[in-house]
Structures are given as structure tokens and as C-alpha cells.
Length: 228
Image 1 (tube, helix red, strand yellow):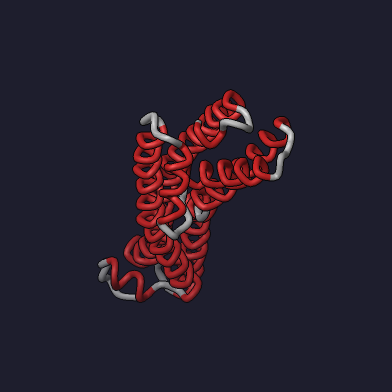
Image 2 (cartoon, rainbow, N blue to C red):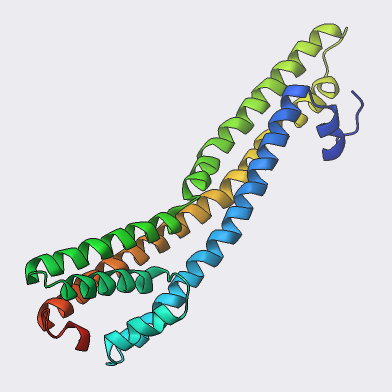
């Protein structure tokens, strides 16, 4: 091993185990950044759609008209729109069958809860991967560092005189593994905490909408639901 301590040279001169750790961590970093960009767009879109739907819902217009306008779009809604579509559709279907009021409202609530669980699953998807990358990457990098330092000291046994110049490259290449581990972990942890908070706020928003919409359906009763 020469005295060139450039990062690229240190990576190329590292042992196979340390190189494998670096490649693994870089792959985890790339994967986490892909998730960060995708999840950021998904959550931003969900918040924007929730704002638009709430504006239409609370505008005082006819809910049957709103429901039909959603159906005519020909694609499944997301967020509160999906919850409303499932709840109002089930309410209308049971109402046409002459279902008693208590069962009518319970059926609508169940349909809304199912739609909400689907939406939460969509929003929470891949967050566990960010948490895993953020929590394990430093330890994986530390493993590479420990292995590299062990190799560096083991190689000292093959030289006549142990000097700092002889051991420095090995220790430097080992520490790169820790640096890459932190590089992968820090953005993943920050993104996970931010996204988890935003998803929790959306979940609270959905819970509130389910309760408010259930109150509206209950207040108007089975005979006037379509004119709510």
C-alpha cells in the first residue's frame, strides 16, 4: 500500500470485506434517497388533494353531486376523497335496501375506515426502509471500520518497523466505511422523522373527517342522506 491517501485510492486499496461494506452502504444511501424523493411527492400530493377536497366538501354544495362528480372522473381517489367516496357509496347502497338507521351508519363508518386503512398503508409504505437504513447504517459502517483496523494492525506483523506511515493508510480506509455509514444514515433518519410526523398529521386529519362526515350522515338520517 502506497502513501497516497486520496479517498478513491483508499477505497480501491481496501480489503474485500471493507469494499463490500462500502458498496452496501452506498446502495442503501441511493435507495433511501429514491424513497425520500418519491415519498416527498406522495405526501405533498396527498396534502394538496386533501385541501382541495375539503374546500369542495365544506362549500355547502350537494354531497350527491360531489359524489357523482368524483365517480365521473373514472379513477380511484386518494385521501379524504377516497374515504368520502367509500362511505357515501356504502351509505347510499344500504339506504336503497331499506337498512335500519343504526346499521346504515355503521356500514358507512366501516367502509370509511377500510378506505382510511388503505390510504394509511399507501402513505406509510417504505417508511420502515428509511428507519432501517437510518438505524443500521452506522453499525454496518462501524463493522467495516473495525475490520479495516484489524487488517491494518495484522499487516504490521509483516513489517520490520511499525511506523505511523505504515498503519495510517489502513486506518484511513477503515474510517471511510464509518463516514459512508453516517452519510447513508443521517438523511434517512431526518427524512423518516419528518415523513412520520406528516403522515401522523394526515391520519389525524382523516380521523377528524370520518367523525365529521359520520355526524352529517347521522343528522340527516336515511331519508335525507342524498340531500346532505
